[in-house]
Amino acid sequence: MIKTNRWNSFDDKRDQGGPLIQRASRPVLAWAMYDWANSVFSVTVISAFFPLFLKQYWSSGVEATTSTFQLGIANAAGGVIVALLSPMLGAIADQGGTRKRFLALFTALAIVMTAGLQFVTRGDWLVAILLYAMAGVGFSGATAFYDALIVDVAPKSRIHQVSALGFALGYLGGGVLFAVNVAMTLWPARFGLASAAEAVRWSFGMVAVWWALFSIPLFLFVRESPAQSPARRWAVARAGLRQLAMTLREARRWRDVMVFLVASWLYLDGVGTIARMAVDYGLAVGLGERDLIVALLMTQFIGFPAAIAFGRLGARFGARPMILLGLVAYVLAAVWSYFMRFAWEFYVLAALVGLVQGGVQLLSRSFFARIIPAAQSAEFFGFYNMVGRVATVVGPLLVGFTALATGSSRASILVIVVLFVAGGLLLLFVDEARALQVAASSDLSARTDDARVAVTSSQT
Image (cartoon, rainbow, N blue to C red; front, side):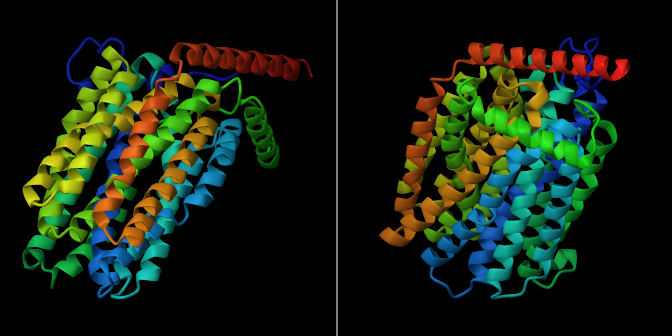
């Protein structure tokens, strides 16, 4: 029988107000600490140092539009693999109760590949792209199973707040290490380093160590729901594939879930593309690298309280209105970016993005977790991750090809506006109440089936 791990959730006796972290139980904090662990990859590697190093070190002497295209390829590479595998792996994990095992596998892949970036030499842009792509595969694959575990630590009534806690700690943890890494690049001699380039290379290794260290609490203290029924490895795989095929056949039943997946694909494509291409875009339009890095650091620390606030606002007013508010802010930021000329404008835009970026992402994750059946959370988050990986393929490639075709990096930023507008409009067609009813019915059916299996097993 499928069990809901209520002991993993908030402590109801302490849930009478006060800081969110104080009210969270140890498993909730352990789950959220994984965001603290892996967010350093998002900010230090994806948003900051990889695009900076690719343009100025690994691809030194290459035209700006060409290196932008290379970055688009780097962000897109590996995305198709994860997109194809995620739903299948998720379905298998739901059958076998092995979400944490898959999480550990993909995390290890990402950590090793990230550490490898430290040893890539000048001009070896192809090696850098390959390592970065494989690290991205590990990062995205792990994120799918990490997100799926939210149903094991949070009841639906608290899911927005728990999601917010994870994103908030992610912004804070990512910001702390990023601040150290930025200081290393600004004053390398004080850290015993020969140059800023050496500092960046050391930063990749530090990200890997940080990620490995702070992932440990999740594996120690978060207990996932047990397997639906005990079975051997290959039987579990076959059952998972059958479940995936059944879900696809019943796509009409999950209409609202599918509409949300398409909507989130569009607008999260825009969110992810801005995060991955912002530094490259700033360099292409003539801004200084120090201004860009400091602005990104500012975004991290603004994102910490903003994520907490968005979680509370989402619980009070609903996730959809707050997501739409965030998308409006993104449209304004993208349009302003087209006309941007001065560094202070990039700071303002960074602050605006910091206010809404985490909110859009965390409420999308928690909204999705609310409207899917808990018994199939890894499978459905596999679809969610598949959508995210397709987005990381399409968005950066659109920006890269637009820059090449027009000869202008500024023109490429306007492509993203279409993604925000289309995604926001489609989100309006998701019927949350209907989706909740379908999810509850599916979970009830799963529990009934498990009870029948248990009775049959006991009789035999």
